[in-house]
Amino acid sequence: MNEHELPIRGENTGTVAGLKTRKRIGAGLYVACLVAAGGVGGGVAAGATAMWNTAAPASGTVQTTQYTPVIVNNPDSVSTVTAAAQKASPSVVTISASSGTSGGTGSGIILDASGHILTNTHVVTLDGQAANAAIEVRTSGGSVYPGTIVGTDPLSDLAIVQITAPGLVAAALGDSGKVNVGDTAIAIGAPLGLSGTVTDGIVSAANRTIEAASSATSALQNGASSAAQDTISINVIQTDAAINPGNSGGPLVNANGEIIGVNVAIASAGSTSSSSAQAGNIGVGFSIPINDAKRVAQEIIATGTATHGQLGVSVRDKASGASSEFAAGAEASSVTPGSAADKAGLKAGDVITRLGGRTVTDASELTAATREHAAGATVKVTFVRDGQEQSTDVTLGAATAG
Image (cartoon, rainbow, N blue to C red):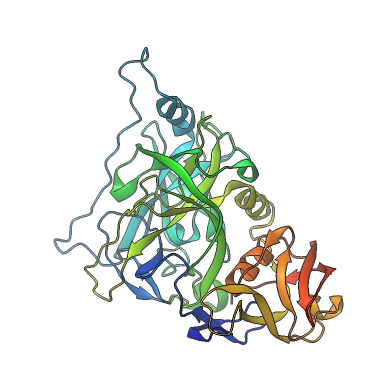
């Protein structure tokens, strides 16, 4: 087994599991939640480089974002990227969040004419530091409207904000299940506060699992307002399209101008505890697949919250060899009595290799795969017991952010 290095919560029991000593995306790379810019500070939280600036400007002045629409000066010479950006940009907004002397900006995606906007939880909670931040939204046309937080979902780092405004253009949503490595990927948003910024690249990897600092606030759980220190595991699309702080919550777009992902995180070359540290694009960015985001968004709009599946096991990586750095599944170290896993007949020692059609090579991938599903969903789980591969259907319980 690979021993764990940094303590985090187990997959769904509250018991201790941990981050692996090996780095999922290469030595020296730390997954970092993207945050809104307007000045980008940083620090270390739960093993990731936090980048939200929570300090008041030294001069006492208010830092503002630059407004620039996506401009086409020569319509007779339009590239695929230009056409896709023109199609998607009317549905992209810049979001400002503030609480006391803290604040910053991120991006968002208009879902409907009723003004529901999809973004990240860390955008509207100031990276988990505020439960009731004041929200303003600037549309692609330059108009500014007050926003209301409809609901947040820390387990997926997704949130819904709503504005009341005329003429809103709903985004065209693509099918992230059909994304291929090598496909054109276009990011639109307000990196470093520069609205209307378009960058392009390709889909570098699909079905990647990352670990990132949670943006749950204890205010959302027990009335306090300090940041929680948990981490979350989420499945993402990886891209080399330039993504920087402020792109958070904005779209990753395909060549047809359809949204295929919600930009959520970047990899940073190294980490530091210095408050002046900055992290930026190094060609490894991550987006939440729109198919997953759509389910969460629909639940938040309908009920104010979203649900996620819970298996009911504490797991650890199963090494492929006695001293191997490569994992070959998630081994159940214990099964919670009465849990979904227990009811399905899973036992301690079982090595889970697949859940709901997604391959599982380690503990984080199992957590991410489980939480992609709504509570109450029935999924097929494939596992190895005593050297024999078996499968069973599991009706998932409900995970919590605490």
